[in-house]
Image (tube, rainbow, N blue to C red; front, side, top):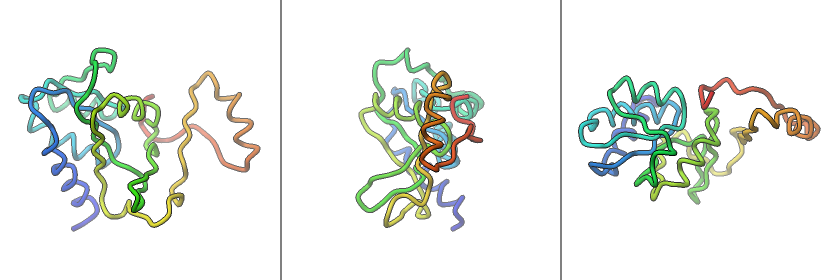
Length: 163
């Protein structure tokens, strides 16, 4: 199977965790996009979704799935999203798709987090993928200068997260 076929397979496999009549938390990225495609087959069985990014919101709406604002829901049964790296202890790096803060907030109100990823995301040691740090716009200069002093690069991400 190709990497894209594996992503599609895990996206569809995650449907088994979706309970009819619920609101589903949905992440962002290429693997989450496959889950959204699969979720489209259940649009008449779920109340809707809460999305972590504009890109996922657009995709959900294009499939006829109602998208709730997080402020409209008390809790979520599940949150389904991918990861950038996962080690054997189920620790992971997430947020490379530029929606880190929204992903963390939505995941925090979900009863279960279902991580969907293909084998390319499995690593022995975390850290090959750069650790994302999201800074809110009003703090960009206050945080950016000290971050630059560490020798790390910083900048506006190219992902389609929560912009």
